[in-house]
Length: 107
Length: 252
Ligand SMILES: [Zn+2]
Ligand SMILES: [Zn+2]
Image (cartoon, rainbow over all chains, first blue to last red; front, side, top):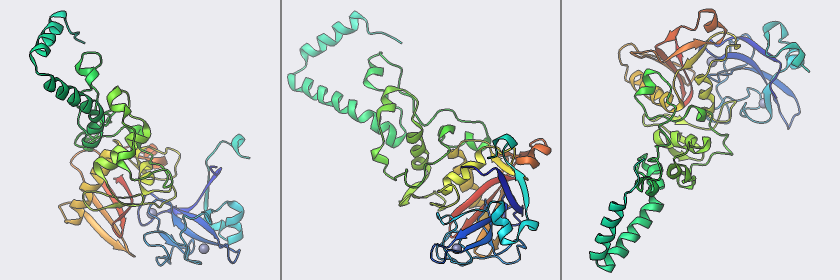
């Protein structure tokens, strides 16, 4: 289901059209939640919202991968972060939040 | 549609009377073969052979199911076209690179192509299957499973429509998926060959190409595009990783 909010850090400095969004990965083996920044258009991955450090090494070729476990960020174990998850990662001050649905649609 | 007159029928009867029996049998076999092969030949090779019914004057000649609903746009006009409704490829589990398994009914009935069939049409007219749900373009770009949408073809299809609520800019290609794929290949070939006006830069294993076009290929969408009244765009940007097309869209 579509999320009622679009959370992003900034426009992608690599491709220009993408949004650098917070992607979380729930490592099933360790059960812990880790976050990274992923461009939703060109799939560039950064380790945190400062966008200083890109992550290019992963376990899957030509696929954006989690900087923590190395698995594909398009797998079921990953998803776009919601507001509580962004808070949990300590990145709330780094993001912009856009409401994508009318208020009466938000559940 | 012209109906066969009684004179025609008599003429056919006269011809049949003078023909040897084996010729008539041969003729019948040829007609039956044509009946079964005509829709398939149209599908495989993109021909527009008329059905038996059409030749008998009972039905309009079958339209090529691929040549419908072509949107405007310079790139679109130069290329094979698929229906706009087919822009969204199926998820990896739904699509199979099996050209021969698709239904052949639409070509002979003259009806509109089903979304799934037309979806396969644009892949097979332009892209060549090179593995499980992987396709290669004539210029050598690979379209593989990946992206949030499940397949890179589904991802670039997002650039066939505006997303007016999306923050910032969103380049929109004006045309259908087939013409988009042709334009991407064109931009890729020219940029890789360092043609005049093109740019390329390599960033951490990813190559970003830019190539200008002579004519408008799309417009600027998203909130930024709306603010600027959706200016027309004549340049394309491509992001490629290991020959995999990650994304492509018109830019300013
Ligand atoms: Zn990007
Ligand atoms: Zn992970």
